[in-house]
Length: 112
Image (tube, rainbow, N blue to C red; front, side):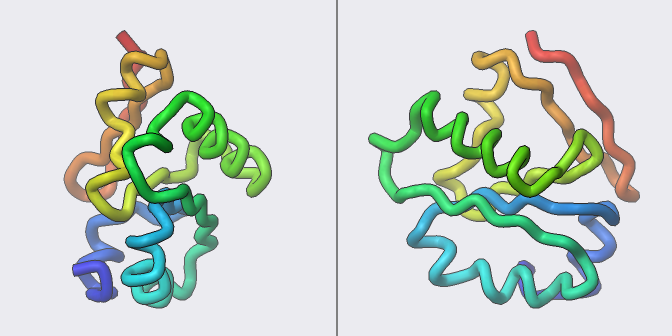
């Protein structure tokens, strides 16, 4: 699916993207993913692989990458690979959650 341009264009709303992944997954899939959306500005945040790197410091690296790439609240942050999902950790850290809905609509929900 990550190399299917039609599917990605239909499912990923237009705009800037930040892809968060780890070094292992990046080697395998990142180039194909970014090639599937050639008309998009895509920033990357490649994290070290492994459970010991899932820390607040790593979350800080993701936030730093967003700032360094001048991405604002309209940007979409996507995790590439199951090991980098921040969905549960995001709520505990008090970061806002943005959930994509069908047809490209997005909503911003406050952290609990």
